[in-house]
Amino acid sequence: MQEDQQSTDAKIKRVSLKNLWPDPNNYRLIHEPEYVEVTDDRIKDKAVARRTARLLAGERNQNIRDLIESFRANGYLPVDQIQVRALPDGGYLVVEGNRRIAALKHLSQEYEQKGVDLGQLDPEIFSRVPVVLYEDADEFHHLTLMALKHISGNKKWGEWNQARLLERMYREHQCSEDEIVRRIGVSKTELRRSLRALALVEQYRASDYGDQFSEAMFPRFRETVRNQSLKAWLGWIDDSAADYYRAENSQNCEKFFSWLSREPLIDP
Image 1 (spheres, helix red, strand yellow):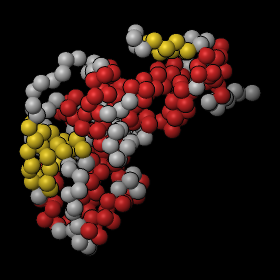
Image 2 (tube, helix red, strand yellow):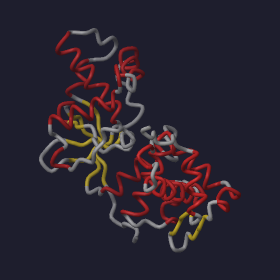
Image 3 (cartoon, helix red, strand yellow):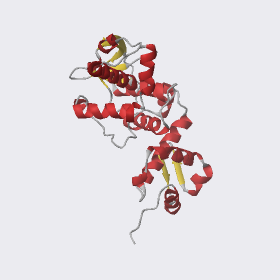
Image 4 (cartoon, helix red, strand yellow):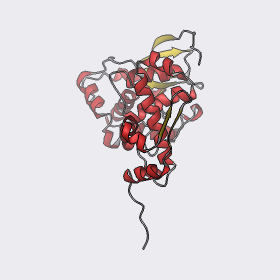
């Protein structure tokens, strides 16, 4: 992939909360059973927006409870920028800051419909949210922003979410290993470990036990591909030059997958 030489201009804007749309494809959500990829033309669909808000908030707002309480106690403190991109049909998609927007939308709804006490939060924020708009920024630029924040930054996602973002940069955008390392500061060892683990996950998903995979299992696959003895036992082929990672010992692979899984129930 050639390095993009075009500069990207950022502008600070004040935007109504009603014109800010949380990202239904946010990597924070990709492990959710209900997650489905959404195209830009459906982001404003009411059902999509409701599902996105529910997944971001979690059951009884557990995923945003800390932000709700912080806003009430301290008001809106622009410690972290909310980064957005313009949607083709108007409004803005939230690239970074989805939890904060979800928390503000919840408080706005509670304030308007129930008159709840906002504490130190000035309701004017609902009509004047400060955001950073990146003009002429493509998807790869936004992926880089998320990676800097949630992979090499101070607010890390889970291992599964990090690996999937790295995979998208590497495979869909054909960004070289060296370029990813340079752009986001992740080590080549960590990058390759993520790609190896995802390759093993795909083998597991293709096995008889594949329907049992969940994102919580991913750390086991990462530990497997860093264990030299276990890799040798699995007949692991590790050719980074050819981008080929695979366990070739099918018998041991089947045993290993069965150990990670529940045996299927057999009717008497």
